[in-house]
Amino acid sequence: MMSNLSSPRSAKNPYYSDMNYRTRIKICGITRVQDALHAAHRGADSIGLVFHPPSPRSLAIEKAREIRQAIPPFVTLTALFLDESEDWIAEVVHQLRPDCLQFHGSESVEFCEGWGVPYIKSIPMGSIEAPESYARLYGSAQGFLLDSNVAGRLGGSGDTFDWSKIPASFEFPLLLAGGINASNVADAIVRVRPWGVDVSTGVEVSKGIKSADLMDHFFNEVQRGDGCVEPNEPR
Image (cartoon, helix red, strand yellow):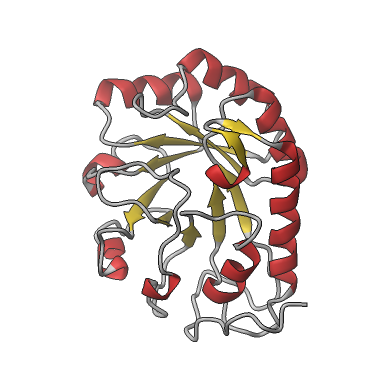
């Protein structure tokens, strides 16, 4: 039981159902086939692969294709970029056929739309004071990833941000990231009511290397958090 958790946001987000409470899960920064398979078998909705070369979790196309070919049906693949060149993104899109692109930099809405692939736009809560206004600039986005980083930096730091900065009126599909792990994800689900949660560092033993035990614990805690959302409460 989690009766001591904070009350939910008061506004009704039209993307959430009053009847079914299942928070979607993306395991991000995957670098190994076995980690992708374990995440998929535990119920991950999406596998996130990083294509930002300075990142220690960044993948070469060949390794990414191995992971792509190994994951089972109905598990999507999300490709992450931060102000990358058009040539690099084009190669990833052509070679990998990702289901979704995730942009973490200063990419314009026209740039994000230009690949013919659904996209998610990251909102760096470390430097954005009005996330809802920022989201409206990217009206074609499939959803918005709220992370703890500042503008121009990729997430994956393991740091959280103040969830009270998320406006109750936020009307877009909200993906919560930034320091999410098994110790706080149930609380996050009850307090924030995200459409999905995105975890990387919180299930790692080192950068890019996931732990099956940490992933198991994380999935269990997501399920526990979902079980604490009462029917007909705002989601």
